[in-house]
Structure formats: structure tokens, C-alpha cells
Image 1: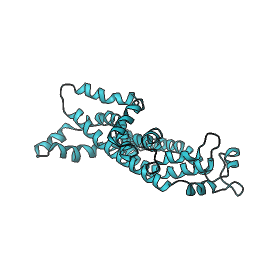
Image 2 (image 1 turned 30 degrees about the vertical axis):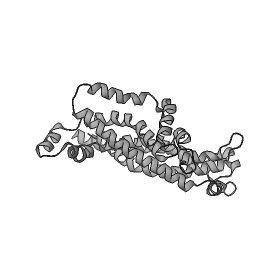
Image 3 (image 1 turned 180 degrees about the horizontal axis):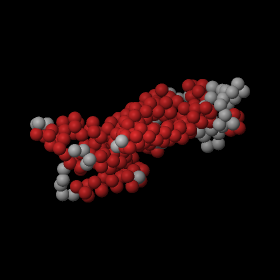
Image 4 (image 1 turned 180 degrees about the vertical axis):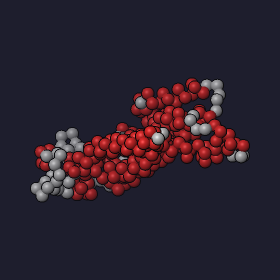
Length: 279
């Protein structure tokens, strides 16, 4: 009876923490969007104030519309992010299933080897990656970015998903084998639906660095046809003069798609957190 009374209280506390965390996380987004509708003077004198009759100005959005092809930049960022997430989740889940389900010589060493990618930044191999892309003719293509981001996200995906998949009931998987299901069907139909919260966690932590990355787009795909939104926004930042109205306007527009993707994946993440809080 006491546990039944405590469960709603724990659920309410978990939701309150999530709401507070969301408000704190969205505060920089709020500041960026609000200042994108202000004049340059108001941005520096009253950065936290709402735009008023004297400070409201759309010059930033007008500049963004005139300079550069930001529609193409959005498309490039969406393509790179979506395909990278798909391959990270697919290959990461398959590798995690193999490491957690099948015992073989070198299983632990293989898991440690894959986990090294979390500790060693992929940017240390930038020169070798660039040489590889030049040799394969993939420079200034979105394929190069997808390959790099997939390799970048796989270590974290394998590390997180393997821990979750070890907790999936062996009886359920054995029952599927008795019913004649292949290992692929067991993986896609039985295991994956049970690790959706973990998949959402991997997607959230993988998506943001890919969308906001400037390093690899600048090195591997700097041409006008393959620029991402983050790289395209740099046109308004100069060594001596920066158009902050246009920068904030471009960043405000770039926030919208990533917020949509974040909400799609975070729903499963929030369900997993709140479900664990009331057990």
C-alpha cells in the first residue's frame, strides 16, 4: 500500500525534474531566438529583454535570405544527420547484440576496443581521414560526412546498447528460437522494441554533435553545394567585422529542425526515465 502511494509521488518528482531540466536547457535557445529579432544595438545593451517597438528589427533574417543558399544548407544538414543516425543505431545495435548475446574468445577485448572510440577523439585522425577521402574521391560529398559521423557515433552506441541488451530476458529469445525465428528476426522483432529507451538515448547524444559540428564539414565538404547549416552560418563571421544579426537569425532557423528531431527521440527517453522511476 505504501509503495502504491509512493509511486505517483515519484512519478511527479521525475516529471518535475525533467521540466526543470528542459527549461534550463532551452534558456540559451530562448536568448538566441529573442535576440535574432533585435537591432544590433539592442543585442548588446539589453540581451535578455524582449524585442520592443524601438528594438525590433528583421535585418538579420533579411540578410540570411539574400546571402547564401540556406535552404540547401538545411537539406545537407538534415541528410547528413538522419543518415548518420540511422547507420549508428543500426550497426551499433547489431554490434551490441552480438557482443551481449554470443560468447566467443576475445569478446571482452572486442568490447574494450570499441569503447576506446569514446576516449580517443576522432579528430586526432583528421589528416588520415582527409587522405582517405581524397584517395576514394569522396571529398566535397555528403557521403564523406556520413561515414565519419557514423564511425564517430558507433563506440558510444555499442557501449550503451550492449549494457541494455544484456538485461533482455534470455527466456524470451530462446522461446523465439524454439518457434523457429532466425537470429535476425529475434534481433529486429524481439530485442529492438525492448531497448527503445536506450536507442533514444543514443540518438539524442549522437544527433546534437553531428548537427552542430563545424570541423569535418569545413575540412571534408567545404564547397557551396555540400555546406551544412553550421558551416554556412560562418559566412557572417569575419576577422574584423561580424554581422551578429544575421548570425543569430541563421542559428535560430537552424534550431528548429534539431528541436523537432530531439522531441521525436526524447519522448522514448523520457518514457524510459519515468518508467524506471516508478518501479
